[in-house]
Length: 193
Image (cartoon, rainbow, N blue to C red; front, side):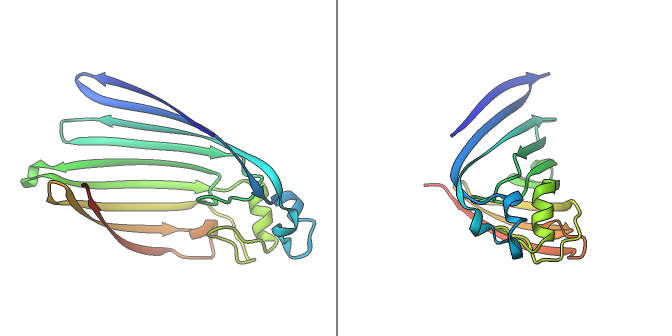
């Protein structure tokens, strides 16, 4: 179950939006704490129907006609296995987007963002003991906040077709100071019908 509340507002004729999200998931998932009592931290031995819950806050603010800022904060319970999307238990991001008006590409957008993400102490202990998650865990965790810098360019090929090129630089990937840093290149094609 998820609920989102949205509030739109204006600051000196510049639009802004704040969204608050709350959710509760009930699923067949393992417990990090119980898995620590099992050799090899085999979380599959702890499966039961459990709850996970969390909150998110999203903020978007137009600064000028062609420049906007955005930020997200997120937190979840962090004691039960992630089964849906990511192993992150808390995160914060801040970014800036610029429309291409000044370089005669008004439908294009250039963006920069920074993200810091972490995991709960229970999740850390589980990964240190050899446990694995959706995207992390190799039995040798030296915990550190995952830090990401992202730059993207959204190119308007046509009114309903956009191609985005993306670059991400990640320090401490999968929350491990002994890994990375890594660079990730990506692209996305968006078509509206």
